[in-house]
Length: 438
Ligand SMILES: NC(=O)c1ccc[n+]([C@@H]2O[C@H](COP(=O)([O-])OP(=O)(O)OC[C@H]3O[C@@H](n4cnc5c(N)ncnc54)[C@H](O)[C@@H]3O)[C@@H](O)[C@H]2O)c1
Image 1: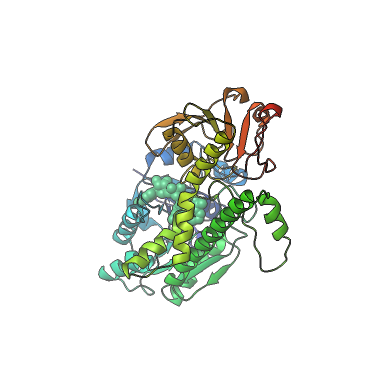
Image 2: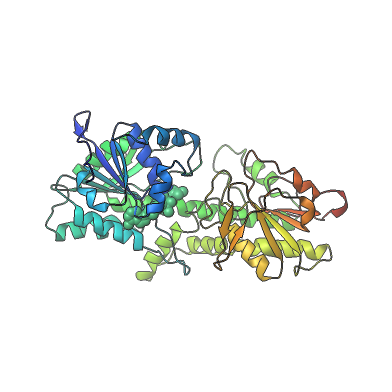
């Protein structure tokens, strides 16, 4: 029989928090809550994920790895796949994934299932906090309305709030604690209760008037990033066509102390949420025949970026008199940004697929990712101990910190899709070491 959670109290209040979904967001949240003195019930539907966390094998920054090591085996830190234990919790935080499908439409299956379970298991006195990114009205549609159908009065019997997560996995500055949370409860009592718990993981809360306002804030934040990254990429292409170094221009513009915020161009968008989240807004608007043309255009440009990167490789090859068919290419780094093991929505996977589809023999090297599954379902292994002379061209996608890339010196052509490592150069110099064609 499973022991029930210890009914501990924190500063006089019940403090058993269930975290539903122990991924990149949920696990650090669960660890932060445990470190703050809460009793944590970590629930994930994936047994393998639970087992991996129990073995200490999760992709975490060093400080969270230490928290995991000290939480392991503690009776206040319980990991389970059993959602039937939800009534033991005083507070439930939903951190399940909200991706998009191949048609870029929201894939709401995990969120709907988690919310249905929460509603079915809900008991009076609980506070339910939605932290997943989703469309405006999610908390009301998937939690408040079904709870009221069950006969609960939200704000009196039970409490519901939305506070979308802003964590940036792998980032050691701007930790959860240093990043304010936007929080909107259904009633002031809902906000107050949610704030008590969120205050333990985040230094401050910015309270907005409704869950919808909190949900919209998150979509605005990530749409803002999408639009600016698309613009940075567009400018990088324009700079290249005018024989200018894109990073020189970004760095120079960033010296303006107001009215400019630097966004870096690159092969992708540096995060798995950006190619995804704004589609929740666009999808929602389509139902009312509304539109957000600037966001839509940015998302189209982001979706098209891997093809532009592949085209650039073709362009470089053709300038050296080579074709793509049979050319040996190594893609350097496949994660969506340096320092994480996450390849979800990484442009590298599309780039590899596109180059292979055009006849290149494509390998990849990423010290953090031993193998990847490509969009066509095939699995490829990372080359261990790369030798630059094994390829005709290296494409830098992501450079993992602390690893030696000296072997790139031996590659006849190096294309730096990040614009960060090699100076822009309009002509490849095969005879005197690697050259970058921006
Ligand atoms: N990863 C990020 O960088 C990031 C940043 C900010 C916000 N977010 C948002 O946070 C949410 C979670 O993202 P993530 O990256 O942590 O996802 P993830 O894929 O890393 O993890 C989600 C976990 O939830 C589990 N899960 C799925 N359905 C479940 C269910 N019904 N019950 C229990 N467990 C379930 C999965 O097994 C998985 O382990 C998403 O809405 C995402 O958009 C993510």
